[in-house]
Length: 527
Image (cartoon, rainbow, N blue to C red):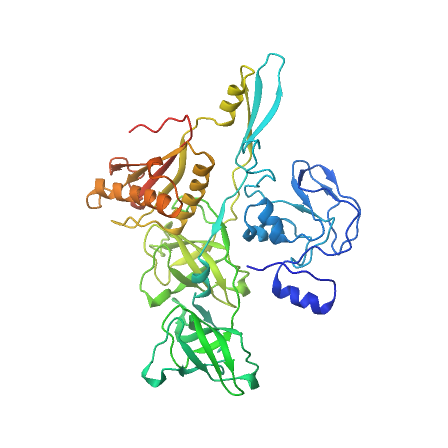
């Protein structure tokens, strides 16, 4: 992820800032600017800026006015609770043409991604989603509750997995800088973490001590599954090295990360830090999801040259930068069983793009209802629109603090995570499941008297459905306890086996775990 830089409007520093990331707000600064988040309508004071900034803020819009020293990174960290969400702020403010240069006085419309109050965590801060109002003459109090209106984003792929992701190139890459061997000599043919390697070029070719290079290896030609035309060459990323010592014609380096076995002849490229794409948590597509009408393509290859693919695996599609594809784009995966008719789409799952090349992209399967193969079709999904904001007002009789306490902590039990699509006879959680449980763990820590009920389900076609349901629910408890530090006594495990199928036709939806959040004072679900 890009980091902030500080600089002035001069060419050399501007070039450096393109590398360092979203820059600090530039001078000159206006005399005064409001601090913190505000809500429109509002008029923006006239000030100097490189951009044609909006002069007014629409009614109801949450906005922030940039002050000296700000960066997108810091603003996202402060108000969205994650610096990695800075692209979401930029997306809402298209008048800013370069994220590396922002200016004091310019307004930023904030995206609806669960904004965090400046007073979050302070004693006496209002409960999230509750706005206190004055006491009425009769001593009753009104409490306004707001729900919805924010998308929850999560990382599509782990950072190391992203850096190690293979890709397809349409033209040969420069292989002049390559690995000669290791300090162990010719007896060692495969290299791994922390091994010392010799490189084919040195200071005469610009190699310097401290340089970091990724290691690459050409594998095989990838062809279009229907036409048979060559799409490019599959390239594996074997890891990366850091240069320790340089001579005129060679260099010595240490392997900092091995993604695969490394061999003599593998070539090197300067290390480029990749941004982890964020995607919104949203319902998976199914047979009732209408076509989006957006660009379509094909799965043209599967990682590790596999014959079939499922959730969490990497695949490659024949759409790339030339087609307007960007990391984070999501696609529905489908096939037409009888093209001559044709029949309706058989939806197999969904994928998200992690890296983009000129004419192809590397993608990760987010959800699978069935296995995928080369030749299966993909269609870009519609942009996700989060649920609208809904506000309700409730009158709490009585003037005592107990009434307000009750209003601020409503005893409402509900489903926090509905994790469906487990592979048959399997209990392992995927990254989407874990992301939901991460959010749930935060809620549990904010409400120390709350608890969770995990109800495991299985499909009637699976072996020992009751035991399998229990193991799936136990996987939820294990993750919350071992990985997120939740007390084991706050997570209840249940199973209903195959007695409550979600669907008679979509078998994958029956292989699931319902995770119920029970706040303080809430009633646990009945069997």
